Length: 480
Picture: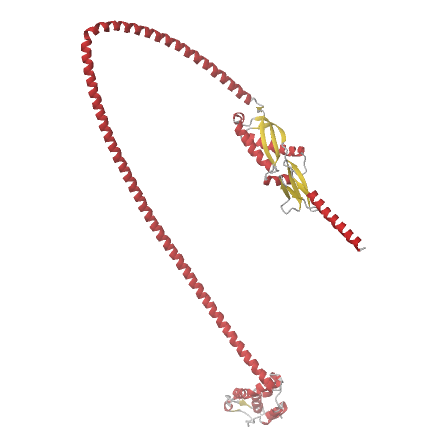
């Protein structure tokens, strides 16, 4: 039984591993060279991950994939009635070849805007963009430029259309403009003008060639006549010379010798003159080169001295500037240190005051704790002990309250109307005595009671009546 369970577990494990392997094989996608693999879902790299070639593993459930076809798409654009820069409407039939781009940044644009669309849909989108940009290019050029400078026109079209197509993930492969026509016949007129000019140029060239032929023929006849006449004259001169030679042969020989000698002397003098002039020219050039070299040296020395002076001024200015900066930094550092020192001093003073107050309160608390212990742990008795210690001062303050009253300087007007509580004079003195706070009241304000050996409130009142002063007064008139 145990063996059967182990076998079942083994089979399950093998099946699980095979499932994982099959899943991995089926989800590992390879990208052909003419397509782009687009993996979308949770890719961790934006809206999609694009691969032009290679392979990638597509995670089940959280990722999926599609392909974008890189096959070129041919688009016929029959642009009609586009306004040129001269406000002349032209027709520009052309053919554009586009394809989905496999460039790194443009692939993502194609994945975001063209994924899932067929070729016809892509062609329609591109065609709208091409129409707009082609009209824009035509509007910026003259008819002559469009018709004669096709390279410039195609360059402008490729630049504008290519930039807009890249925004949706397409690249422009080729532009072919078949023909350019205008509704007003302007281009046709330009063609006729060019043809007429070519015909006229050809006719003028033929006429010039005919003219050159006639002139050449006339010149040839003229040269022939001149040469014949010259030959006849030379023949007659030859005969005369032959006759004269026999007579003047000796003289001519002498003349030739003399001429030869003269020519030799002239040539020698000319050679000497040329040699002398060349020597002087060479010396002058040497002096000129020396002067130029000396001038350049002086200029270089002046420039070096000027640079040295400028460097000295700049260095001194930089040193002065650095010195000012250092002084300012030092002053700021001194102010900071003084401020920090004052702050530290205030902090230490406050800390010392706090520590002193803490020590005083601690000592007072320790002393009070010892007094409470001496009173047997009764805090009220401890307070009574503290007050008893201050009793002498309290009594002294009571006496101080009335000791400076001059009784002999008090004037009492007595009307003689007495009762059982005494006359007016006795009441005045009694009231004056009562104005001194009784000792029992002081204890009551402190929340305590006097000990019985110091008397009770009744005994104090009785004693107060017994010690009330009496004065004999007259029935009428003041008594001092």
